[in-house]
Amino acid sequence: MKRSKLIAIITGAISVILAIAYLILVQLLDYRDMKPAPISQFGQAPAIISVFWQVDKIYKL
Image (cartoon, rainbow, N blue to C red; front, side, top):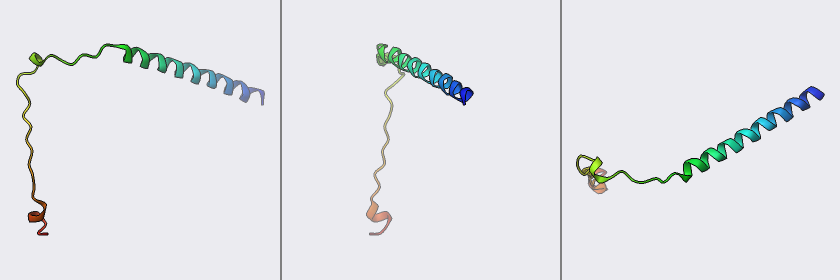
């Protein structure tokens, strides 16, 4: 019983350390100033193609 309790305490401590490390990492990544890429980085404006289907003609409603 003593060994299983020791293993439980060790794995719990490792879990807490990993959770704290994860929270610190997320805070550091969230702290960065995220700026969008300048428009000059893109060759041309992306074309948006959309197709509208008439459902009643396709399914003959």
